[in-house]
Image 1 (cartoon, rainbow, N blue to C red):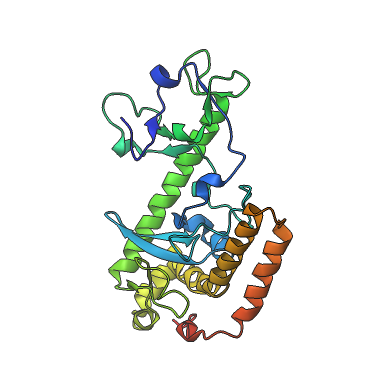
Image 2 (image 1 turned 120 degrees about the vertical axis):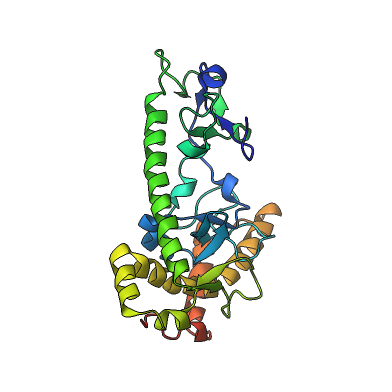
Length: 279
């Protein structure tokens, strides 16, 4: 019935229950990364390092939220506020997630394609919150909006998988190794620029038409964030310790730390960047 802690939204279980929107990003504090769709890759790449992971379905892009897996992301403050300028689409509809039609079971439990995480205390019995269902048994108005959003996101993610299959089919993915990441994270892949230079012009034309080159360039440019994200994460940890001991710290101090780390970026070795726009 449940999938990775999520419960299908059903009339039987949620017919007389309600839900409320999240007001804190505490749920994302320990996330190392989250998937991003090709449609949002430019916004995401302007804020986070973008790398690729590999699942049974193939390669897919992710926004890296933490450079050290055992440390919380610096993009969530001690009070649960989101510190980045962009919120990835995968984080916008908590406590809900979407299960695509092909994964829905035959019992009717997955008829709406929606899964809800009931452990986040956002499912309630308070009539002042949003209803799961209206009096006719249809999804409530706001939950219908969530469902529409997820359907669009699912279609975009499927397009992203197809795009990555094309890139992978050209042999362009390889384990990611750059000066800022090789000692920090494993399990990520990047686009091999040397291999990209050897791609036939016909394949490059295909990548130019289907958005592949945009994804590749966004990924490469975004890796510059690795240079400041790690020191910024260390600084965020220091601020969290101050907060826990009663020493006041605020968002402006964190932003100053980010700015200082970004200024240092120009002094770092970017040898892995060479030819990032080369075709």
